Image 1: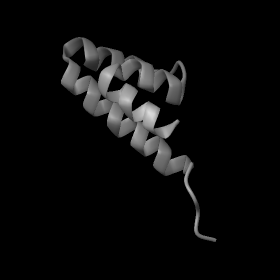
Image 2: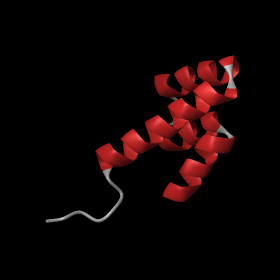
Image 3: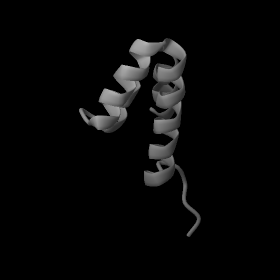
Length: 63
């Protein structure tokens, strides 16, 4: 699922944000950035998805 989010962040940035955060202010920001240009929307989506993965960690933890 993580790889799918990153691929969507590149191809369809708002969809990746929607799957990651749901309907939120982050989605509105990303839609605005994507309207301004595909590259700003993509950069924001990649950053937001990676921060979400970092914060909530879906990987293996070292306990």
